[in-house]
Image 1 (tube, rainbow, N blue to C red):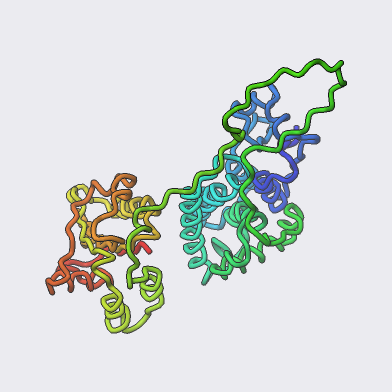
Image 2: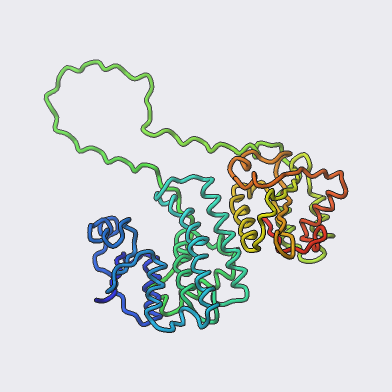
Length: 416
């Protein structure tokens, strides 16, 4: 039997397999008359994928679901397929970028876009987290593409196919030019890929989103009832009038303000400091560090040292680095109110994890303590800025001084 793909002709997840097939010389038939919400609820479809997700690929050996798995299967049908690179390390990097595309790009675009389209509950704080996560991912992708035309090697691979399909819905639906212009290398990469003949054949003409979709109304307008035939008039009975007319839907309640937004204005503008930190490439002490102390407002902000409580557990370098990365990811909710530096110290395990954090307010914000469980894994010490030794330690942590407290740095991560 031929390979049959069960999906609509506009599903970006189906495009991954169809483009991989174009590059691999594999024939896939797109099932005719597929109707989302109907075809994928049919018993014969649910036998192939019990949860009804789309797409599904029918093969001579049985069905496959999950779009990345389908694309991998299609690519591997051709022996020594260049879509998987020319070496084991190429293969590893291709798989790396496929996972990155799924977990960092696709997920965050979806969390931003779908609630606005009515597919899920729209929550402004959740949207802020999604946008911050997407920007962080695009920033990493942009940095990689600064010196690379493609994700791996010098030609299109499966990683590029998956990444382009996942980016396409963002570029078409919600990532406007003003948003993507922050990531010029991602822009160059995307428009290069979507204009490759084999990719364009499947995706068609891609146009940049001109605006962010408005939030879908919670309830569609009810159609008016058809006029009923008049009956013989009867004497009207006096009806008791309700004291108050209640609308079908309550007016949306204003989003409660974060207590930090109610603090008196501070002379320190956090975004100004983050910009100075990011843009200072030379004379860091004279420019960035001096600028920090010129801006710092001890009445509006506070500085804190933190030490990981279980340093003896940090024996494996990549596990320790992932632990810190996870902490920073879960701190997204505080991005508007905080700046942080996390140092991983030591030439070998056990590695020491120590941090410096700048928070809005004179104490650690309670909502961060409540929402980010990692906070409990650290001991926290408020910086005494009148103590010159502590102040110098702040300077060294901001600038990633090495050696730090007599030991080399394995890595330094910034939250900004």
